[in-house]
Image (cartoon, rainbow, N blue to C red):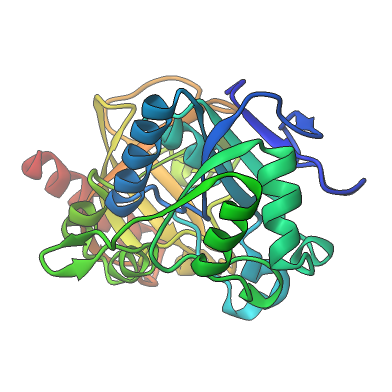
Length: 313
């Protein structure tokens, strides 16, 4: 992950866990966006970026933002997360991108005029010499900047702006919004079609309340999962590519839970995963989360869920 950095914009502009820089030194072909999920539309854009970089003898760079701008500007309208910052970076780097840069999005940065974003951030600090953007890209204060402005400024200061067409699958424009909606409905197979892979996350295992162990089904509780784009319920999953599992996402109403959490019972596994990161691939939605009358009734249902997963795979 040494190719992932943050661009320092103010004294408070650092992002935890990332080395920050004032500016880069080599010339780059650049694309800009949130890139949540790295779906097939994003992949199409990344392929165009790396292709243009090779043609022009440039390095390739993806500029993104953290947190999502709506979390700062309108928290109640902010979308759920398909990927966290590390998952997003790993997926981007798999597409032969040379550098991933994040800018910490805060209210100070949100007031940056569109022209200053082009001149100061892209041209001066990121050394952008070719810009590849999606058909609906907007930038700067109140999203005042349009692609035509970027093209005009590019001609003036010395870089080309390339606009890509929308990427469609089965007639639908692929977008993070579409994928979030499908996952919220439990339609994993359709979401996978637009993602180009099964929905997967990689998170650290943290200590839970031990109820799964008491019931005879120990679970790995995963960190930072309260804002996932998943329907609350039970899933068949694959863990670390070779273990099957049963995952529950929700508040655990049988025990009076309030906060959403993802916990995974890994079939035929023995060992301690605490503080380790595990990869969880979602294969099938099994049923909705519901409140049981007592722990014994819940235990019987878990046994049925496990039996169903073994039968499916």
